[in-house]
Length: 446
Image (tube, rainbow, N blue to C red; front, side):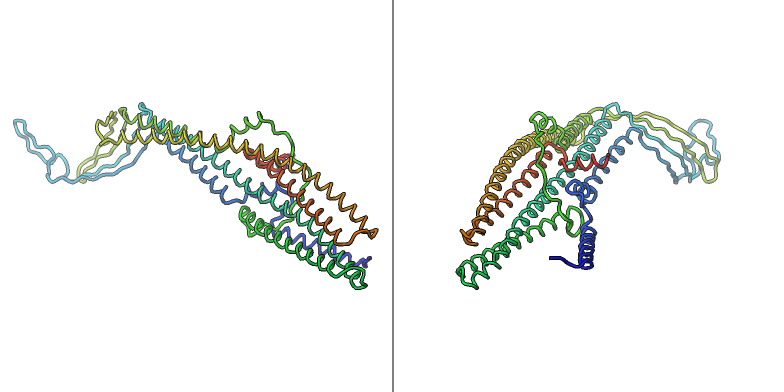
């Protein structure tokens, strides 16, 4: 069928305008999964919060280091005596004179206190806070990978649904064509009405299946929108193509797993607790500090004088109600908890890596089986189509073969999506971003 050029042009412009509006509404992530991962990295509130916590931990390191330099302060003071004389002469002969000091006096000046970290308390606090800052950085990196894990599950799910929908839409289109032919055959009495009813039932079944797929797609898009900090993800999903790379050696995976952010964070927390225990033990040592002070002391009616002083102070607490014993016990328990948590994280990482490897190999085998099934279904449908064209079978027999082909196409798409998802999760189990993210970043650099 041919359409006038003006109608075709108007239809084309309408399609382009609709696609542009769809991209504007959804945020225009037409670059596929790689671009989507970058957008999640930029927009996700969880990652912004984790980055802010890492910045706070970095600032806490500067706070801890500032204790090395002590503190300086400016002060003012006023004194009121209840006697006109501060000192009464007691030597012979007694000399009585005017008041040596005013009853009321005031002073002002500045003082500087410098702690000398001979006991290592400040150093232990600084080192502990540095490890906590590193743990916060690693936690932010782990949050990023967790967001990537959620994104790939949702996006691969959308790709799987899109492939299944296309397979069943093709089946629905074929059924609608058969319905027209069968309806005409029923009208002329060539076939029984039951065949038309069978086709109608099959059409309703496919339409119900498509409705369910649309509902699932809406759920996935809404959930993906929350990661992007928008209402819903409405962009067109990139179709699946190709197969994942098979470059997943065990040695490479084991080496990469050591650098997983959650493992690095757990290790940094363990190191921080080691430093906290050192600091708790060093509270038993004496503390040394220097203090310098300059002051102007002035009476209200007498002349003033500038004074300065410098002194050193050594102090040691010999009794504190058991605080240091309890603090040491608490630090010891926290260190043991951190060590066990690290071991638990390491065990979980190894299990996740082994599971991801097994899932990857299983998904590859499932894809091979689905590919073989699709070939067989296509061959069967082609044979049945030829037999239907020659009048050897009815439309009902043909729709069985077409339904089997639609299911085989859906299974093939699902198997490919599952294989890609397994590949993404294998990268994530090694503590790395999915291959689509790295490819997108490489293309952007080039």
